[in-house]
Length: 494
Image (cartoon, rainbow, N blue to C red; front, side, top):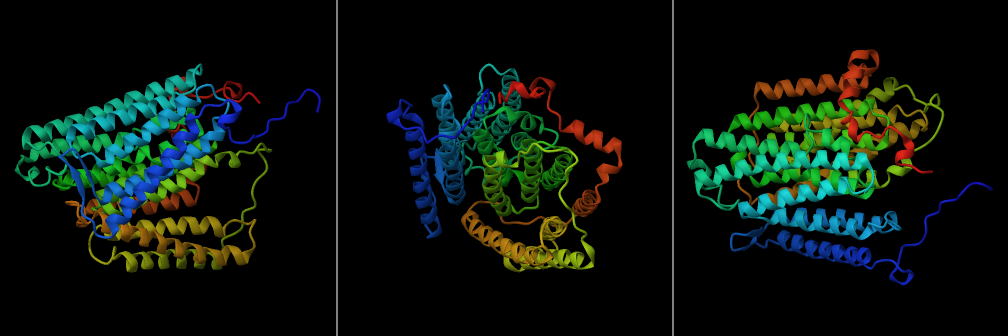
């Protein structure tokens, strides 16, 4: 039509039409790295021992799992970005940073020397901050990148304090050398180092109250956001697994980790309920999911934390790369039909949730003793219950699908989760201090009660009935004013 322009998605850029060869070359290279990582993983599953290089790097089960996950997510992002970033004058710089970030993640998860681990952690944060502020000439992007950089430098400072303290008091220069020596250090030293490690993990994984940098990072190109939420924020879980001998030495630190993770998991879910934009909702969801991940580590289930890391990464990468499909311009009064749960729906939801908890316990062996596994199983039950209720209450679906699909989808999904969990537990079996669940304490009971109360409050829409609560939650989701997108024309020219 006259006066209008039509925007279409063209073919992938090629070297023959005048575009750079860098994106295609790096995309092929990262997929080759993924294939090599799969080979390393298969070798580990066949019983091959860890490989080490002069106290500098070690390739063990955790390294293999994270290499496969990181290169797979990066490969998807590289492939997606070839079309997404086509036409950008900074495309080579973007691909160079994404590929460099991938190499830094691979270095971090394989690093055994304390100095190499700390350097990779710092460099990884600086590269991600550059990706957040990638768009030149956009003040909000620059402000968001600067804010993220300050958070990441603080995280690196906490990590450096922990590593320096451990080296000074134990004489160990490698991560693997800490396990036999940390017991010789005084409780005060171990407590300080463990606290600093916990702080570094909490900042990097955007736990509350350090979530501001993540909610400000929506200025990053969508592929970079996918890589951030699928990979970068997971570094906190990797850090805790690598330094499990230090973190688990003090029971108070583990309880603090459970409390901090639980608070972030609950608040992340509450914050998500008041956000209306697609990427903002996904960011709040990540805050909650990272809380779950670190809480699982605090319960002593480090294998569950890594499993959560991998599966959440797959889910969140898909959601971010497909976030454009969730954007619609429609009347604010238009609402999706909502069906009544009814007695049958309640029975289906409750039965599926309980069956899911029983199946999880039977397949993983968790929740069968008086330890942290009971709390882990309760979280599985509540998660299944929440997902099942959303599907059953969807009035746009036929009743047969709403009631029949819930157990047909939920129970096989739990079986798949349990299978992945079993494989990862086997790969982590050789790592020190990662297979001991924590004994139940009153703190765990309080956390369980908090989750049940939060679940009931969310399901009943408590935030809709309290203006004070709604405003408090909404304010908590607002990033600094210098990073807020207040005018559509600033970032959307169409």
